[in-house]
Image 1 (cartoon, rainbow, N blue to C red):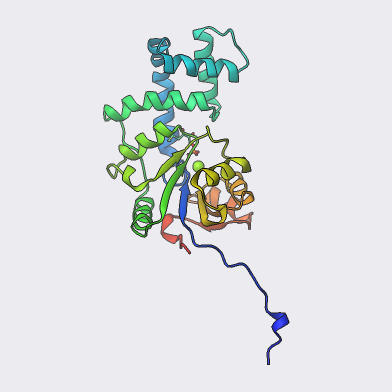
Image 2 (cartoon, helix red, strand yellow; image 1 turned 60 degrees about the vertical axis):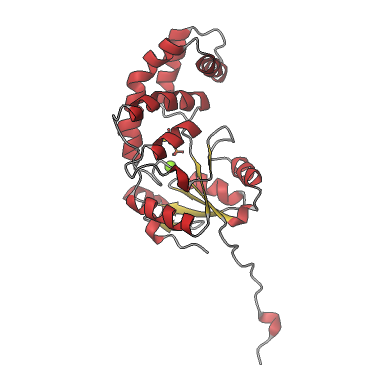
Length: 244
Ligand SMILES: CSCCC(=O)C(=O)COP(=O)(O)O
Ligand SMILES: [Mg+2]
C-alpha cells in the first residue's frame, strides 16, 4: 500500500484566462521596429514637433520631456535634441513613445509601411481568441502606436482580437509593480495571466508578480539567453505555446 504521507501536494497551474503579449521581438520582427519605424520617426519627428508645438496634446508631451530630462527651461530646439538623443539610445520614455506614435500614424495612413506581425502570432492569437481567452498587449510603444500597428498590420486589421492595451503609463516593463498593476486593472489573479516576451528581465518581473511566463526566443542570440535561465518556458514561435 502506498504511504499517503509521501504524496506531494503541488498547486496545479491555474487555467490561463488572459494572455498579455509584448510586441517587438514577440508578435513582430525587431527589424521592423528598428529598421522601419524608428528611422521614420527619426526623420519626421523634428518637423512634426515644430509644426504642432502649440497644440495642447503635443505641448503637454514636450513639457513631459522637459520634466523627465530635468531641463524645465529648454527651448523647442533643445527639446528636439533631447528627443533625438533618446531615440538614438532607444530610451523607452513615455512622452517620446507618445510622440513617435503620432508620427507613425502618418506613415501608416500614407501606406509607407504596414505593421509586421509574424504568421504564427496571428494564427495563435486567433485560435486563443476563438477559445475565449482574453488578449492584451503590453509594449513600451504607446497604446496609440500599438493600435496603429495592429490596425494597419500586414495581415489586415487585427484589433478585434484584443481586449485592451497597456504601455509604460502603467509602469516600466522591467518592474514587478507594472505587472501587479496590470493584473489589478484586469481584476484577475496574476497566476491566471500568461505574459509573452523576448526579454528575460521583463519575464522575470512578470514572474515575480506571480504571472505565468513564456519566453519567445525567435533568434539564436535570444535562444542562447533563454537557455541560461531556467525560470521560464521557452519557445521559438507562437506555434509551440500550449495553454493550460
Ligand atoms: C508599438 S510598436 C513600437 C514599439 C516600440 O516603440 C518599442 O519601443 C518596442 O517596445 P516593446 O516593449 O514592444 O519591446
Ligand atoms: Mg520585446
